[in-house]
Length: 135
Image 1 (cartoon, rainbow, N blue to C red):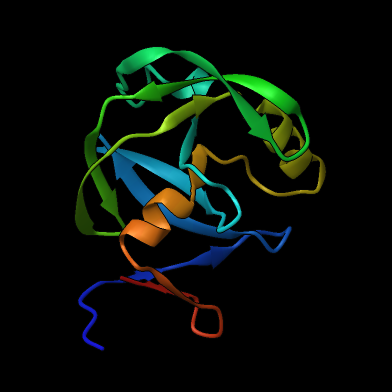
Image 2: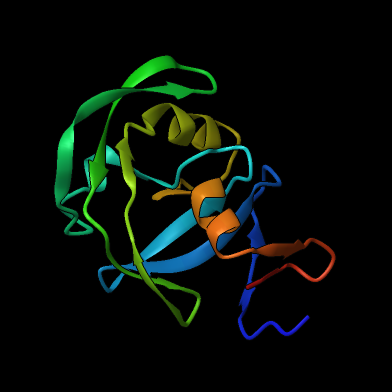
């Protein structure tokens, strides 16, 4: 199997998998979550990442929060590690509860989540032993 991109991963103090990305050219710290159906960005960071809303707000189901209001963004330039991934859209979602939990456990907050929509589309393999995403 020929793969051309290898992206380094880090593990947080809480053992969550993290990767470095750029959204519209701006650095982002993303949690890799195979159980999240969509890639999300903390809604409070919409302007920071220059994300433009696409469509109307909708209800999204969160793991701990029940239904939450969410909004889709227009697709924009997305880099994972140092590799250009093309354009990708994100769900804007309030991740305050996630970051509060991470902070309470001594971990750093995240900007967003890299979810199954991206991982499946790019046929990503996760090499836990070597801490790599293989695309």
